[in-house]
Length: 138
Image (tube, rainbow, N blue to C red):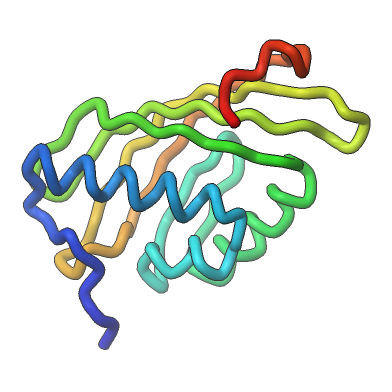
């Protein structure tokens, strides 16, 4: 039995915003182990065209992601919530190994279990090349 991961559903505006900020903070560590602990053991993801099942696959996916997406910096914003679900928009910036910078935009749908762990995450993401001088997330 895992501990509870507060705040717990059903969410109100304050607890939904806390959950989004906690996710942003965790992802900005770029630590696959730390990030994966927010998800259920059997979490289900769709990230772009990748279908990921389980915490172990999440760790593997995030390790590959941050080997490619260097100096990753993320900003998330709550768009809506109901009971144990949330809609979140995000943008992040990163560069590849050639030095080309990108801004990635996306939307996520989240569903949490009764203990506050995310059991489903569905993300749609688009990338836009940018000049380093056009970065806005630091």
